[in-house]
Length: 171
Image 1 (cartoon, rainbow, N blue to C red):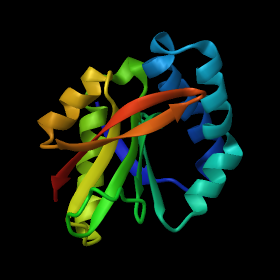
Image 2: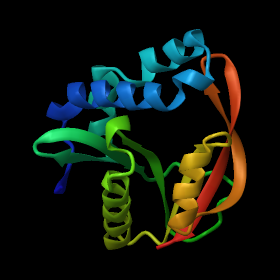
Image 3: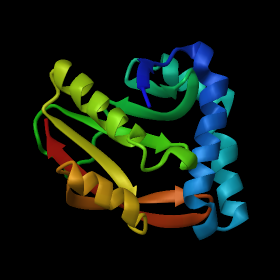
Image 4: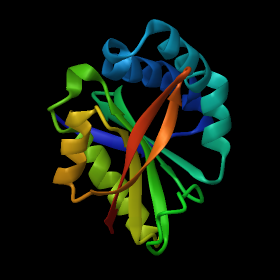
């Protein structure tokens, strides 16, 4: 299996909206109410939202493909750091999602390696992320990559305030 990764362009917005919605729902729908899922997904995973975000100079999207089919994506975001992060030159790994049929196949590993490489090449020294405290699979994945918890913040999913752990590692 060969995974290829490339930077997304505005032409990818509709595909990313579909992939983003699918991967988010498969990861979190069973643990949240349909109303809260719909409230979040209907705003966060639209073609318009992705088009605008891809064009934002602070955001970098990368799409993973197997046999020309999109199977995952990641987003790096700069200039969006929490106050408690005092490490030098930080960048956020804001999203990393893989199609549920591809989990365990190495797609996430390829996306993580790619994001760490890009962040380092661009001169960042720290990478951080937020992960839902109940997403134990993701927390374990990040710990395997050397991320450590340094704080927490509230993420609002619909009308449900959820605690995200903040994790970081050096590049």
